[in-house]
Image 1 (cartoon, one colour):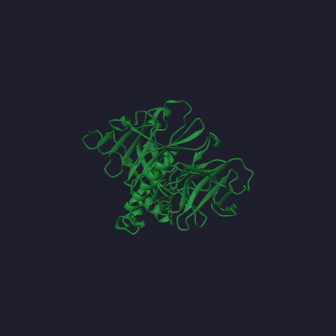
Image 2: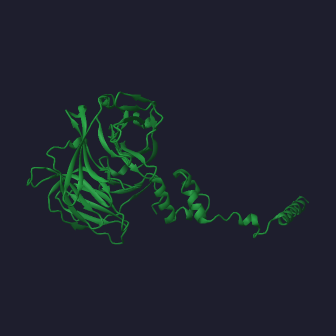
Image 3: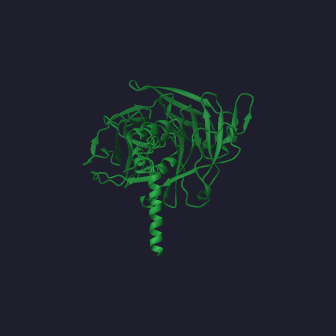
Length: 407
């Protein structure tokens, strides 16, 4: 009896539903069909976290958010809001944190007769991005970043996207050298849109391999001047630049910048007309669209009094010019007697310096070459910074969020 009544009730509900249902071609149903171009425009304005959530809504949204035109549009928009990336080792794992690159203009400002500086009224909490797995070894470092992607330097290289939290091992061909010490650099050809790995062994043999090809092989590349890379490198406009020490002793200037054209796979050596560079506190930067070597100079590491730049005005004739920025007299108050090193330069022309360890008060210092102003911001990394076994922090400027997945 209860079964019959239940069946009749169900049939009644079904008939009622059939009566009230709208036809598929009704205006209300058609209004749900949003043009894909409009969806791409809306999705491109979302945060990384919201994009990840939208991928789980439906297969249609997931396919749209994997389209090449969407990833390129998102990358273009996110390049206008770059972030600063921090990475350090903690118990064998490499952790990644980030903050917005543009400092907060509403923080406390202290005026001086001719110049002024800002000091953050409260620390900024860095956002945790991801970590590399533990089995890469405790001594690996990261390569000069390509916007959106980071590669580690180790015997087992890995590419990661800190924005999506993904990582992927690089399948490299069998090495043609038996040397143990190998220096690798992750490079990108923006014209052919190819990723490559440049490898230098301790017997000064240069090899390059293209990633993503079916039969990846090492190709030997000749460099006429023997040199020792000094771990100061930067990628700019399809060229990898790194500071090096000459080993041929044929000139009075021991330093040079080595330029590796990623697409043509050719080296060019640019002798630097300086007999002294403070290597420990130096960096390669893009200064007003040109390559430059910058270092802190003064009477000792804790008493730097000026920033010295060596700017490459003509790459063909290898013509350099020198620029000196005197640091303001309140520099010692900002540095707070800590080890400071140069990170790079922002698109606004600010030279960025940083301290080096997460367990101590960690500072980012911006120095504007236009207005001669300084901003100091304290960064916090949460409870992980209070634990032991944390290595030196690597600070990376101009990090761009990239939504492309590593399939």
